[in-house]
Image (cartoon, rainbow, N blue to C red):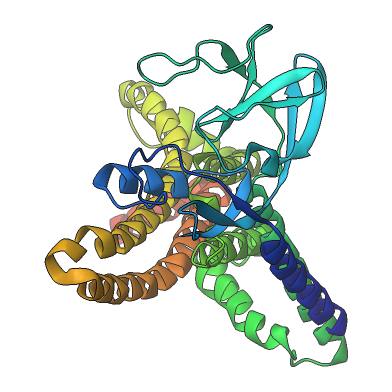
Length: 390
């Protein structure tokens, strides 16, 4: 427990030190007027919301305008690791100077790289700057294979570290006695909740223990990531479609590899129905087998993304409503609405983790459920015989 506390303190101190040391300055080329790079128009607000929801190669905690009317970004960079035409190349994202318009060219490993719309491109041979078409698409650059440690990856690693420390502490506390102490006292009711309210009712007493590891992992993983998304660090991991796809694929493969013969029989040759209906139902059941993980990934992605978009939209009220209510009135309305929505988001963070875990356990329970058709038919036959005798 002491090791876990020391580790968390070291991580927190490192983040604070990096945040204080990594302050980069530069004008925002997206604003043509001399407003210090402030985001205060509808178009700029929409662009800022999209940028916030997207993944990033660095952490931008906050920004302010200095005395020279330049926009100063406070945050810290992350490692950029890309595979180019000359091989693997790595450097820190601060070399792009918080500029996403592609005008900052970084020369590494014998190639020229630019960041355009948060994506890293390699310039064609002989090009000295990025050329754009009418839709602002690069015409003389192509994407590279990106292995960078982005903000979402940091969030995943942080969630994994917190889970490792938390459950490690819970396991150690059980060695001292039946009643956990420390962080284990907080985690144990949640573990019992997942076991007694999710796994047992949906999977059954016979099989639920086999899948408890996966269900606990996915529940706490999603819940912690959702809570991290409410912090000033600006994580939006579960709002990335690639993350929700991976989580849904885990559930999909576990269901398929755990399915018994009754599960596959109900999909390809439904028992108890006429043969023509079996032929019609088979493709429908196969389609349903594929739509279940699709519903999992879309539900999680859409709800988390919508929550972040609403919070960002309410923050923007401070800028769009100040002409009507004044600066103080606009910020007061924005603060109250954002606080209200943030409290709802705390509930949604738990609710989405619960729904994903509950539906996963339900799909697993459908796959491992045993149907005693022969016994049912025998019981029905004995019933008819008894009725005949009577």
